[in-house]
Image (cartoon, rainbow, N blue to C red; front, side, top):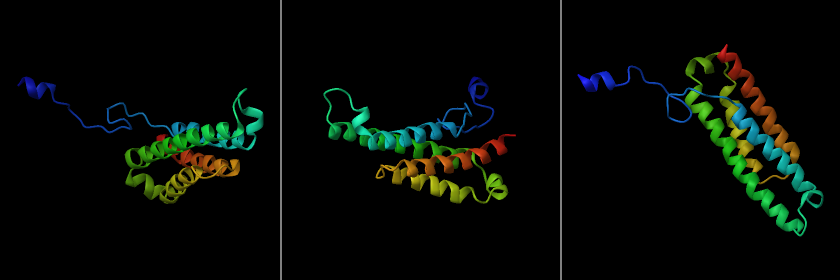
Length: 138
């Protein structure tokens, strides 16, 4: 009897595998903003490197951090796609699959690109996903 009273009454799913139910495309967007900012700073390494740091060292740091942030973009997008969006969302917004495919491919490509325009394209695609996300929340 005690075991039955302690058992959860309902099953819920969330981004962190706990029942918090918190989802927000802003997480992916913030990381993508970092990717684009790093791409911009990479281009102007002379202006941003610290005293005593070589341009090559600064750019190496940029690349390492950008790759980490790009992976976080993908992770946050995958959580939204696999845990938040449901078949009924896809029925109403059939472009979702293509948007997520494009966004995760852009996040992967950001690991190799130092072009801020590429980072902006990633941000724009995340914004399209966010628009749909917020439509589904209302």
